[in-house]
Length: 183
Image (tube, rainbow, N blue to C red; front, side, top):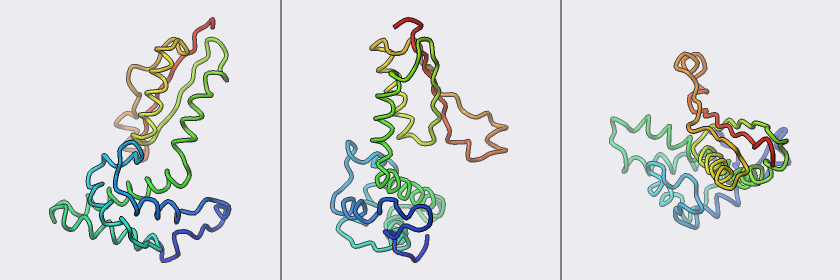
């Protein structure tokens, strides 16, 4: 985390949205599963209480609030690993909210079938549970409605040797669907 204000985009992201409005919205409300994709994650309620109503000008300030919340929540033996995971989830949730990533993904998934030729196959690689859940549900809905002829019964995951060689592949899930030959 940097000391720079979190709302100050730099470099090629200079035109990007600021995280400040989303941090203010998030800090003024508690966790809600229908609105917040990560509120079901471990320690989400404690982290939400720690940021609720607070002015958080920098990413370092946000990280410190998360650490403070977990001191009372997590046993000392597990604290370092749990804090690292919680910080990753917190910043991931903030990035997803700022970039409106779930809205973009949902729009893509709703428009996708119209872009596919009869008999076409589509494969989507996801990297976290929020994305994967949306892709899975869209494919299942398409199967029920006849938009897709077949969908992957389960996601395809990286093999153990790939995960060892490429740890970033650990969270990746590949789901596929096939459009009927005749529509």
